[in-house]
Image (cartoon, rainbow, N blue to C red; front, side, top):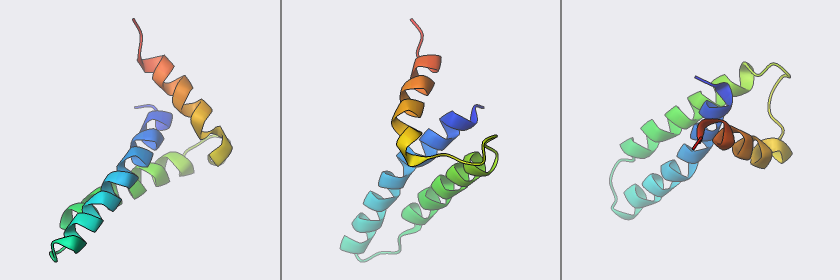
Length: 76
């Protein structure tokens, strides 16, 4: 898979992990789903960041990266 796509998927998992964490906290239960999704997000972001040819991503480039990646995979 494309490392840019994996990076964006990892960034999409971060808010899901936070929502799961808050939900578990509000229900007073163990945040296992938040932990699993957070580890997946960290793994995807970390792998994409470490294997990027230029040495990582710059946060200012993330919107352009998202548009380019979606344009690459979303063809008519």
